[in-house]
Structure formats: C-alpha cells, structure tokens
Image 1 (cartoon, helix red, strand yellow):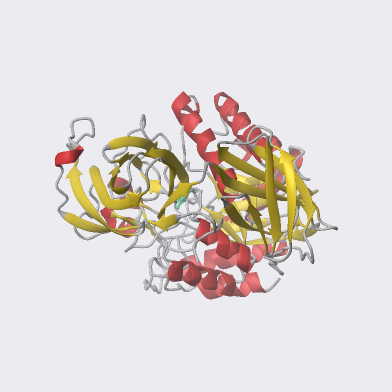
Image 2 (image 1 turned 120 degrees about the vertical axis):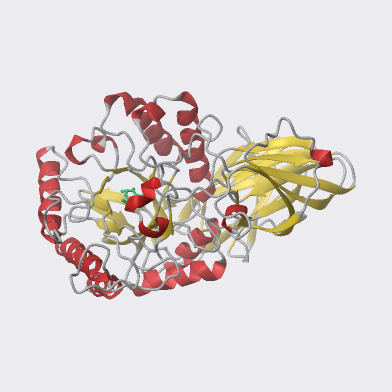
Length: 562
Ligand code: ADA
C-alpha cells in the first residue's frame, strides 16, 4: 500500500521502475542542450539516486532520466514527486512543465496533456551546489547531498473538478469531532456536493458553498477512538465528488503545552528518542519499506517514543508508519548551520518559507507529527536574523495552530528567540566537542553543562517552557573496541550515552531528548571529513548497516526504565 492519501476514483499510475538514463557531467548545462537528440545509454531505478550507484558514485553534474508514459488528450494531468534532489526540471514531450527546487519536498506539477497516446517524460536532475538555484542545500552541511529521485513518482489524470487534499484537525476530543478542510481545484463550482464516509462505513451527503477553493465542515467521527503514543488508533475519511474521491487517514488527538510539559490529549509526555537521517550506504536517501520497518523495530526495541526527522521533510511512508506505531515526530524543513547572510538573502528566505508551508500542508494529517521545526543550528543568536525567525514562526502558527513550533539552537544562553517558540530546543555535545581539550574522556562535562543551561533558562524567566535536548552524542566506529576506552571507541560512546540518558530520565524538567543519532550516515567527502572518519557521521547508536554498537544496550536499559 502506498502512502496516504489514496485517490480511488481517478486513473493514476506509479511511475516507479526502470527509467532510461544519461549522465551529462559537470560541464553540461540545460540551456545548451537539445533534448530531442540526447541518446540514453543507461538504465537506473526510480526511486533511486544516481550518485550512490557504483558507476556514478560521488559525481556531480547534470543527469537526464527519461521514460515513456501513456496519457489521454486534453486532460489536466498531475505529476506527484515524493521528493528529489538537488534540483530538477521536468519536460513533457520536450516542453518544460515545471521546476523542483526544494530538495526532499513532496511537490506536485500540473499540466495539460494535449495529445492521446505515448508521451516522453524527461526529468533533468542537477546535483551541483548552486546557492542561487537551490539555496536550501549548501555544501558545508554535515550530510551528503544526493542527486536523483529520493522518493517515488505518480501520474494522475485529473477530473474537471478535483480534490487536492482533505486536512483533518481535532475539533473536540471529548466528542470525537473533527474539522475537515476540503481543498478542490480545476473548475470549481460555487457550491460543492460531496459525500463523507468515515472508516468506510455509512456515507452522508452534503452541499456547501466553496470559499476560495475550500470547504470546511465539522463532523463527529462515529465510534471514535483517540490516538496516543500508547494507543495509536487511526481513522479514515473518504470525501467523494461525482468524478473524484480521496481517502485520508488521521488520528483524533490534541497537542498542548502545560507549563514545562508537552501533552498529548492532556497527558504529559517524556520524549525519548533519536535524530534520524534518511540514509543508507547503498540507497542514499531512498528508504525502501523493509528498511523503514527495520529502523522502527529498532527504535521501539530501544524504548523510544520520539524521532526528530533531521534535517528535512520526511518520507510520507515513514510518517504513516509512525502514525501506526505511536512514535511522536518532530518534522523540520531543510537547513543546517546557515549563517546570518542566508537569513538576509531573499531567495533563501523565500525557499525556507515555501518548503516549511509545503511540509505542513503535506504532513498535516499525521497524528504522529506534533512539532514543526526549521533552521537547524541557524543564526538565532543574531538580531539581523529575527525577521526570518519571526516570519517562519508566524507561518507555522497560521498554517497549523494545532501543533507546536520550535527550532534546534546551538547558541545556549546567547539565543535570542527562545521566548517566541513553544519549546526550547538545544543541540550540545559537552564531553565530545569538549570544553577541556586536554582531558582524557571528559564525560564529567555532561551533567554540569545541562544543569547549568537549565539554570540559565530559569534566570531568563523560561523555567515554565518545555525544554528538549535536541541533539547530544559521541562518535564510535563500529567494531572499534579499545582497552583505553578512547575517542571513537564503542566503550567511550556507550559511557557518554549512558550518562546522558540516565540524566534525562532523572530530571522531570527535561521534556525529552533526541540523541544524535540513530544510525551512521554519509557526510562530507572534502577535508571536512578529517573530523568524520570514513566520511561518515559516526555518532550512530547503530552503524550505517544497522548493526548495533555497544551503546545500544545502555540506551535501551535507560529508556525502558520509565
Ligand atoms: C550538529 C548538527 C548535526 C551534526 C552534529 C555533529 O549539531 O545539527 O547535523 O552535524 O552537529 O555530528 O556534530
């Protein structure tokens, strides 16, 4: 089963499979290319990234993916891209129909198919860094920037009036009443006739006036059961028009803050989990379903109820699984250590806003998502960046007043924006990026550091705001056992993670922790790799092939000891 939503009345096809391929390299530009004369000399998989395959590993440049597709004449068509990187232009029968410039974002492209029969679909993908074209992904980010299709592609034939999405929010927990926000497009009537069916049971008919392509309606879900991490009950809603129907899955639950507690359905949560990259040594950012299941089995076994989807919009199949398994998710838009110059760059700001909005719209119905974030380790200590922080916080609150907003800071007391968000989140690595560089195994830095930060929050008047340690970790190379228990040994990492986990469990003031990170993941291939042995960020509790390190059992023991 593919990810929600499902469209049961339309003709649509998955375009996943084998595509023709041509790598044009670093010198090529799209402008100087005649697409009709390109010969495709290779085959690749979609989803799939070319630059992780043995033949093109590590290469950057322009690449063309091509396949034939059948489509009718005179129809509105929609290509649904689950996520690509880094930049793409889409051609239908040689004509450009859209551009994708937000890596990892699920994006739709709508166009008209003029003729009946077989068509040529070309997706030109460029994985070169170019701040002007793809401002959201810079080379200095500490994770590999792949080129290709991170997720699948679908082609939909749209009826004259089509259903975009139905966004479902909990209106009243006690009665199981939800608000449906139905969005239509195409030839939109002034009044919409539709049926609503919950859980594929009894349908009810409605007619409502359309306001700017939206219809909103409050309805009670029959025989409802609330969603919570402990009981992840889900419902479906099907909205049907004459020629189109959509089924969305959702959960009935609230997310609130009560003093320094984060609550789901009014119940305080202790968030125990990991930051997780969508990464695998053989598939890059592509997430085969068995891998997702495997990762979630490990997370459950570790006693986790929380994942920070670092540092970009998540695979919808992962979110579907988190909904089903009761894992709470922090989802964030793409950013990493962006300097203040980025926050002052109009194109960067525009792309941040666009991706954050799209992320919220795409993931709105996942009850697992409780927290929105952006700009990991951004310039939040600089007043010049305030305008961007204010815009992003305002955007999140407008798009989705039902969830919480945050960003992961690394500025400690110097951060200027903690007051404006719902949860204070800080990344810090005391004892790893140690204050005392002469000290052997400076594990002793960990507890005083965080206690001191909590004291600073109190002094600043933020004692009543939830606080999450959004990153903490230490590197270990799988299999490197060392009698010195030195840096990079599994022993040193285990001691560090044991220390922080036991500390977090013992401090009610700390709402949660996202350990850095779940599994090792590829990063810099430049000289920055001098701090990243194997060109991998080795702070995983599991290695990149999901082999647990020594720390695994320590984290598991601490997290399960709730
Ligand atoms: C940062 C960053 C992570 C990772 C980590 C590290 O806090 O947010 O993406 O780079 O440091 O490993 O040092």
